[in-house]
Amino acid sequence: MSTIIDDNTTDMAMEETLISPRFYTTNYKELDKIDVSSIRDEWDPLIKEMRSDPNKRHFQKTSEWDDFDFKDLEPGLRKEFIDFLVSSLTSEFSGCVLYKEMKRQGSNADICELFAMMARDEARHAGFINDALREANIAVNLGFLTRKKKYTYFAPKFIYYATYLSEKIGYARYITIYRHLEKNPSSRFHPIFKWFEKWCNDEFRHGEAFALLMRSDPKLTSGLNIYWIKFFLVAVYATMYVRDHARPEFHKALGVDIDWYDDQVLRMTTEISRQVFPIEIDHDNPKWMIGLKRVKKAMLAYGKAKQSKGVTGLLKRPIAALNLGIAFVRLYAIPAKRNSVPETSRLQPSY
Image 1 (cartoon, helix red, strand yellow):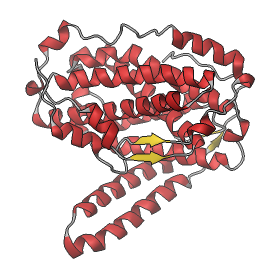
Image 2 (image 1 turned 45 degrees about the horizontal axis):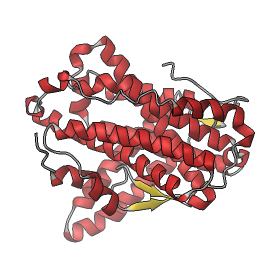
Image 3 (image 1 turned 90 degrees about the horizontal axis):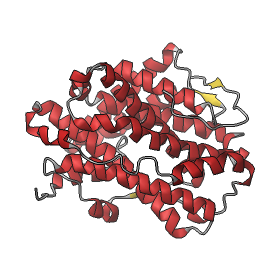
């Protein structure tokens, strides 16, 4: 079947909103100076595992894919499932582009090897998702995306915090869906979900690598940087909550309650993040869920204000932006819980 690149999915991947996946660039020279000698005992086994490429032959379609047709999905579900796939693809490919550039610009043998293997994995993930879209003749033009999507600069430490959480939350999301569908196979409306178990192990390993990178420099997880860690915890968690609630038909088809799913995923991510972060979100504080709902409401209002035209739009947008900022600050202000980081950080994907 010949593929027709659909501008709509490529445009979706190109979108720049507060909750859309972004492409990042950073100070590659600073990254290249990382010294892993202090965590060598944990580093070498992880690199050995990644060299073995456990998922080398995992991402291959089977005959099950021949029985699926996007046209069989209800319009609302089809729209949200495509949005889920495009968002996931953009996130995976963002990692591929960032990691590949680090490999290209770096000279540090340890770091270059790590980023080359992570780029390999993320390229494989993005390509597999694009295969799913290709079945409907709506593949994303990845070459165009690489050249034209806006790149956001993050200092290396912000890359560590954000990408660590992205990889670990990606693991938690995929394994939670996979385990749920193991028990409820009738809700598995697309074969791609069967690949999630081994797939998410790649994400887990990538998160392990970033945990070790942070542990190689104690300053990254102490002092004023704790406030930055909290910022990224709150921002990443709130973004997932808002994004998931924008896909009610998708989660209904999976047979999961969105609040239950998000709570499971975020608690799992928090439990995993104890390996490296000295603080954690207090999920049992009733103000946390109230705050997430407040941010979601403010985000929806902000989205509507941005779509307003003329004088009305000019008046609504700054007010909506202010309300969104206030909602986020109130969520950030909820006290975090202290965590005693263990002497060694390596974990295995046992969920």
